Image 1 (cartoon, rainbow, N blue to C red):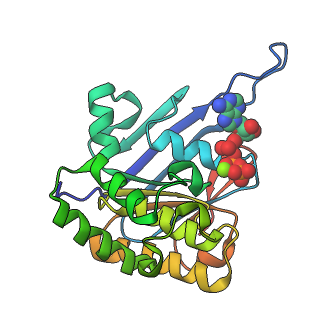
Image 2 (spheres, protein in one colour):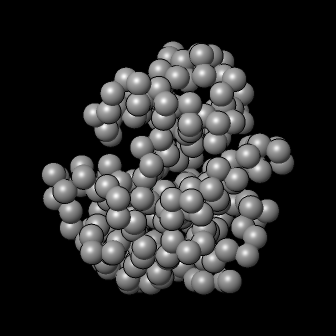
Length: 233
Ligand SMILES: Nc1ncnc2c1ncn2[C@@H]1O[C@H](COP(=O)(O)OP(=O)(O)OP(=O)(O)O)[C@@H](O)[C@H]1O
Ligand SMILES: [Mg+2]
């Protein structure tokens, strides 16, 4: 997979979750919002808790169906992918979960987790896998904890391992859900530096949803407000 993914177009998107009480009205998320992201810079979406940030990521990752609109990633029609195409699509994606422990096996070491994550995507040799683990570990600064059991990691270490496991297969599209949540300044900088590097050196298309305004800088920013996604800068 050498070709980059350049443009993500979200067109007139609406998502409606069934209300748990049947007699209640369902309010649509995103209410027909449209926007376009490119790989030129990092892209940010902010919004209060419950506004739909994680849902948006799951929709773009083809993991959540939509009620109206279109999700187009270059020539991939994401919302209409069939099972076999979806597997290929998921192999191009990196998904950094809001709760990193959900994507990791806590009883395995960091190295074993990364080796497993890599084996899901590529059939490369053991030696190549070892090299890739060393390479990614130095990018996110976890070389010193590779042989530690994942359950013993600190919050910042766990988040960096979560990032490593979502980028180890060199995804073309990286979706990060609150990547700096609960991190101190130093760890935030480490995580953001690794994400920036991926964007600059591999031209990865990146979407970050967050509460954390300190990491946005001069990158394009969208806000989910009154259920719509609006461009802010
Ligand atoms: N599977 C589901 N079924 C029903 N409602 C859901 C489902 N998933 C999410 N929701 C609801 O959709 C809304 C958006 O949820 P989402 O998790 O996307 O918010 P968020 O912006 O990521 O919040 P946070 O900042 O707290 O992580 C919430 O009201 C949530 O309860
Ligand atoms: Mg969320």
